Length: 416
Image (cartoon, rainbow, N blue to C red; front, side, top):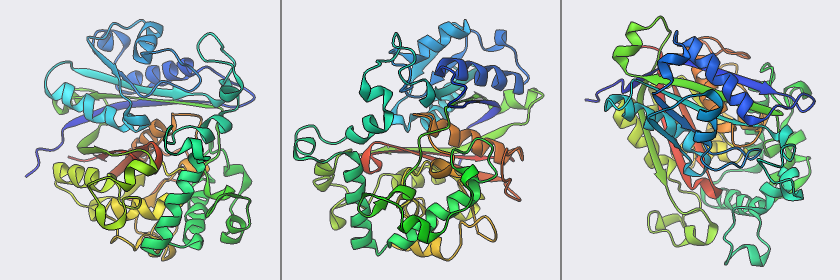
């Protein structure tokens, strides 16, 4: 029997910026931290010498050890502090690290934070390079993260790697371009009411809209891909022990379980990965193992989950995630989408309720923190957009690197 909950999240905060009103990442993170601490019923003196974790440093602020930069900015002096990366999936890993820290008694509180600001890229050359590859984030992201020796010299860039993965899904698992398009349509429907969604104001889209949008890397088209935006976002939350949570005037969300698995991050090494030889390793991922670990710790299963928040940056990832997170059998993810299981009206699970990365967008590496904050809002009935009914348990999933190389999962609940 699992010993849950592992810890509690007693407060959260977020902050946003627009392209016409840019703010640096550290300002957004500081605002989110201040809001999270106040939401927990604490003040700065309670967390001054405690724990401080940050997600991967922002694309718009390249200072190393961003946890130290934020601690200095907030005038904190934590005794437990680090930057948790896992190739950007570390945002969800912060929940695991913080839970272990409070359970071990290292500190009583851990403040976790992340931020980025696409609108500020290149605006602060003293903290982030102002060369073209950083001021044009789309170009930068499009050329990074393929194998420098065996892939990049032959013309493969990151979108091509994702396209190859999607094509293998169609070949090995039977997923279709129409099902990938349906996932984009559903995420747009969920995100239309979210006030900070980058594409929400554009209204609903159809499968035909997606299939007729410009090709990026076959079979991935423009409307299969997450947009760059909003201009900035920051998120923060406070983790403490279950005992501390019950002594505070707060509305806790409990950490029932977590899991992680990191594997090979490029196409070429994945083809030689020893873990999943039966399918050539491009359509089996570490998220299945991470989910199994998280569910085992929580003593729960996929049928117990009401809301799922993921960071699918391309819509072909949606059916794959639904399979490997355990919501349907391997190969049935497209059918699961097609049958309406993640639809806002009548679906069996609430899925990416702010539209996820495909509609809410990414302001940089913050998209992973944004999903955590959205899950917390849903569990507390405080959604800024569409609030799902009857939410008691949520799963938040983050991936980092090409082909889902890094995978982190947390299972949260609003009841013990």
